[in-house]
Length: 170
Image (cartoon, rainbow, N blue to C red):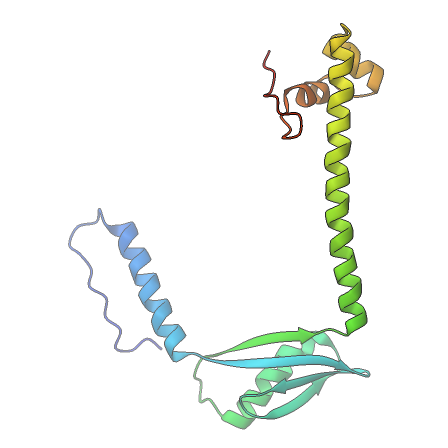
């Protein structure tokens, strides 16, 4: 597969790591240069997955999504007869707009949940610090709040950009 590829090897072994990286990069460049990539456009069409490969201007279908790569490879091999040559498939699935809308909404909700979780942690830190400022020990604050001593200690020593104070060390 890599016939004709020669890589000089230095006489010393102290460059072994650098040499391995260089060999990998050179082999990858040769493989990428020799390997053809077929773009596979996949859409749902009724009960089937419609598979279109623009490079060969042909289409096929699969009943299950897991069969898409198999069907795409079979189509390429039937139409192109690559004779054992290496090739890659770049599979891109176009989802229905309703599904894309749900995914976009899920992403917004995940971001919102992250912000809310950050706010909740800030409020927990404030509650712990308020109890400590009233003279409670960390152990007592933990008992009152239903938190472990370790969690109280984490909250006390954590820094949050909104509070602009550095962690308090004990």
